[in-house]
Image 1 (cartoon, rainbow, N blue to C red):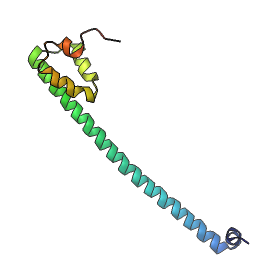
Image 2: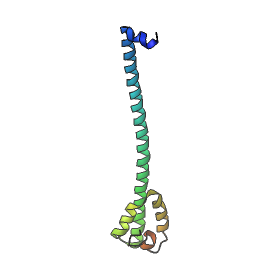
Image 3: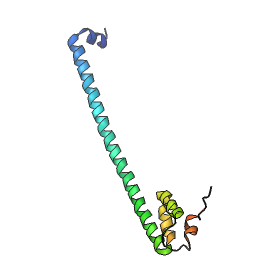
Image 4: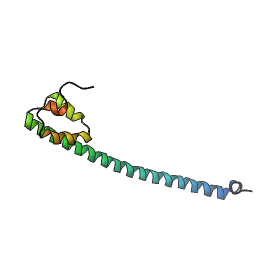
Length: 112
């Protein structure tokens, strides 16, 4: 007879293995939750830092443009708000020397 048959026949062994299996499942779930929370926190921190940096760059870009050109029209503010974090740094660098908002942000009309 195999081990599984012996365990199934013996009430003590059957209960012991069922309890051990339940404990193992609980420990595995707890470990999985812990790892998932740690990964989630880490990912959230990275995303938060990225968005915080983008927000600061947007604010700086608006400050530079408002200093140079006055109050921003709605279309320009919208372009800045929609700009990806990757593009914001380049826009800020160009904003210092650009001749107009249109030259920096592509004009009032939306390009397809």
